[in-house]
Amino acid sequence: MQARLDLLRQLIEEAAARCPLPGVLRVGVVGYADHPYERTRIAGARFLHDAAGDDPAAVLARVGGWAPDPAWTHGHTTSVEDALHRAASLGWRPGVPRALLMLGTRPPCAARPGGAVRACPYELDWLAGLRALAAGGPLRRFAVIEPAGTWAAGGVAGRAAAQHAVEFWRQVHGGEPPDAAAVQHDRALAVLGLPAKNAGRQFPLALTAPVPVAGDPSKEAR
Image (cartoon, rainbow, N blue to C red; front, side):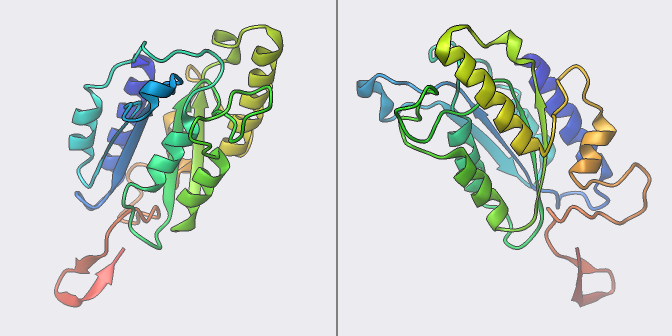
């Protein structure tokens, strides 16, 4: 997990540095652990953590205290679908483009029980969460994964989860995502809509609030 946190920190710091207007880039981060499946422990179980705001450094400071939770481990899937729904609810500015960076390994749970892939106890659908994120404005996506061989086990459930993971990550990324060891920062930031370094004052990723144009408070720039 530390490698993912390091990559996340580097990408957010670089994104903030490329924004020509400090304080207007809104960043949200959601961390997720495995579901608690015991019925007596589902209510009130805290397996999602989030941090969001207009100060990327403050968000990263909160994320820096996160650590893996070994209490909920069930191998083949994890609560990605819950994280997507949480991310969609973080209070994004309406009508502006958004960028989704996903770091992970295992795929989400299935929305309904009865199949080979373990079901979400809350019956959340990961695709509905992704659509909710895109509902407020255009959504750019980039995913970074670790090879399935680092987690998938054998048997029917393991093979089903491995295939589910391939399909999920390809759909989220829009193609074959890079693994954590091969990701290129400039490529990731370009796909997410961020300008190249020293590209002037244009900032095409509109995760920015309208700001007054100097000398004319009646006008706005984005």
